[in-house]
Length: 68
Ligand SMILES: [Zn+2]
Image (cartoon, rainbow, N blue to C red; front, side, top):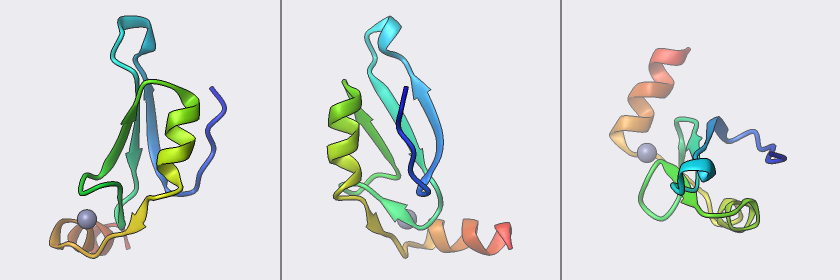
């Protein structure tokens, strides 16, 4: 799969079992109020990444602080 983005922590391709593609975002990023992207196709994932926004929720700030 060819999805490269500095905001992605991990990718889980579950298309073989019909569960689509999961992109787990790094702390500090959010997509439509969740901290991952879940879409059926690579193309849909790329479109979703266009609307991933910086996130400053408590969870992200805590994780970012721990990572430093
Ligand atoms: Zn957050």
